[in-house]
Image: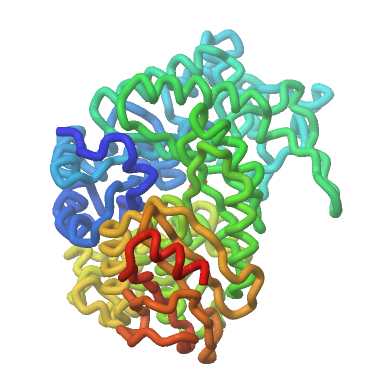
Length: 542
Ligand code: GLC
């Protein structure tokens, strides 16, 4: 069964990002799995989300926790079986929840049969499916160019058997595909069709801006000021590919593509938005990192959001996220940060009332925060390679905290990563900091009021340091959202003389103007329209 709102779900719905290894362990092996997710569908229905994005569950040697795929058409046994996956799809659809698969197109696992063939000899038919180059000037030890991986190491690995280097943007276990070879595109489009035919609703496309590299594999030129010339990403050919991909998706009904446009802080909304094309011919949504990189200040948030909106094409649609499995959680992003739960609630109001599709990272809705991982327990290769300078990404991938029982109710076994020490209070059952109840109320408000998911947005106090204020309006319905980023009470003169405070992060309060917002308070105010439309206009004019 397909969910009802076939077309607009990716625009007006809320996406919940699950890191499968850490959501719910059903077979008590310490690792989360698909049957575990099925068990928690009632929770997700109750929370009120419209779609689940699953980080990769394909067969994988797990060098990069599943972002190294060895077989794109099967499910890794640590997560379950294809039947489990189909059961999840069916049960989620029955609840009106869409399923988005994570798809890694830039690279495969080094154990993927394509790469094994490619590596076997220079003459192999699949040699050119990956990016192979002889050593520079024929001297062993000299990499073909100066490209670096996203983890800081050289982006070339020498293969002693065939005496050439292959390119890898991430770990050496993840060789980059050569998208200039049309057979690669054909094979990947076949995989995309395979999953769409199974009935999934869309893809989150991993590091989609990396697929094409400069034809001549030119050295990157870095400069301190001005714009560096970077040749291993953002090449023009990607736009053509996205057009073809969109056509493929549009030949089905209600499918969506969500691209991860990986950029370093402070983000690059213009680049991100460029992958939406006209808004109707490339990606459906493009994930922009800027909001997650923004520092705690109303004016900074305003600048980031306004800039992103400005770049979104007329027919395009924005989307927002605060946390993910790479950059970490937004709750207490800086270790000295205080008032973490008050801020988490304020961020929740922002995420769920902005114009654009919100992405909630599992556990953010209960106030989970980054967990320090002792060296011995580090699982992320990135942390293993760069410890102690970088401890890796495990801190935001720890088990979901379901209750105050051992292992937070995630598993009966010791989980693959440690559980946060905060779990006795910060869990779904207890909701010790009331973050979950805040999320639930906001999700319900967003769903029940068209203006809050579909309405236009207008900023009311651009560049103010303490309060971020904006309105959401759709036909006759209008709301004002006020967010006090300051640790002090602040006044704000609401431009409605007849209104109701629909929601406050601090509990309900009577409306009065000017509104006094308490420290870190977020409110949603609804304009009451007692008079008819023409009278209303008159009221506004007076
Ligand atoms: C993306 C994923 C990240 C992974 C990388 C390589 O950025 O989010 O977890 O390591 O791509 O696939």
